[in-house]
Image (tube, rainbow, N blue to C red; front, top):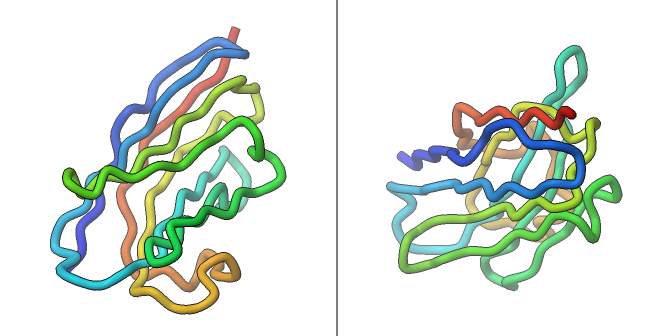
Length: 126
C-alpha cells in the first residue's frame, strides 16, 4: 500500500517562496505518475503538476508554469514542489497523489490517481 505524506505548508507573503515535500513509502519497484493537486476554499480540486517518473518529465498547469518546479530525490523517496513568486490565488490545501505508471501521465486527472496524502495548507497573505 502506497502512503504519501505532505509537509512544508505554512503562511507566506505574496512574492515569497515555499517548498513542499511528499514522502512516499510502500511503492515498491516500478514507475509511477506522481502529481500535486490543490484545492482552494470553495473551489474544486485542480491539478498543479504531474511528474512522470519513467520519463523524468513534468507537466505544469498554466497557472503555475514558470513559478513552480517539481523535483524528486529518489534516495529519499521524496518528491518536492518548489513554489516561488507566490500569489494570493495560490492559497489552498496542496495534495500529493500517485498512481502506477500509465501513458501518458500528463493526461491524468483528479479521478485517475489511486493514492493521496492528507494535504498541507498554504496561505499567501500580506
